[in-house]
Amino acid sequence: GANAIQGEANLTFDGSKLGVGTDSPTVNAQIQSSGANSLLKLAGTTSGSGINDGLDVGINGSDGILWNRENGNILLATNNSERFRISPDGVVTKPYQPAFYARGTTTWTTVTDGTTITVPASDEEFDMGGHYDSTTNYRFTAPVVGKYFFFATLYTRLSTRPSTSSEYVSSHFHKNGVYVAGTSNIHHYYNNGDYDMANTIQRLMSLSANDYIELKLKPSGDDGQYYGKHVSWGGWLVS
Image (cartoon, rainbow, N blue to C red; front, top):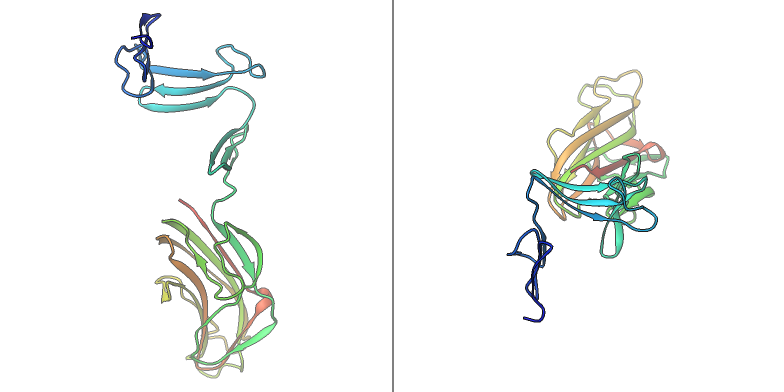
């Protein structure tokens, strides 16, 4: 037909699909090499037009290639916004990767014996994507399924000097309101002389979208206290 091209410099166009190196393209545009490598080069007036210029997109054996031959960045975007960047030095930045860090704002605050509280870390230093609630429930809610890493630092003490080994304060993470195994940290259990201390907990977790994480604190055997300005926690999506 009028829109068909066949055999012109190994080029085929059937009116809807363009083939280079093949007379039977299977998609709108297909480049078929006679060897293991097949490349499409994109170049402009700034990049030059030589073999070592521009951007190469293609396949090398079974490996896909996105190769910027210029001293510039590679950018990936969705929804008309940049989501991923590789610098000329190989530094990868993901400005929307879920991550947060928040601190408390109070001094010594008493928690009643046997009561589990959500630690109110209300002072956000950063919250990429807005997935941490620093005003109402102090939860991080996962936006996507993946592996997430969380960490926390707490400064706590018992309200009175310990007299038995059954008095302690514990901190731990909760996932969807339930204690996460392997995150409990016991403070002051045998500490009869010096009854305030700092401690940390950390945990790599698998989360589904909309799972939420909270930092909890619970005294046992006596009222406990935490020093809000020295309490902080954070987390991020690893993979």
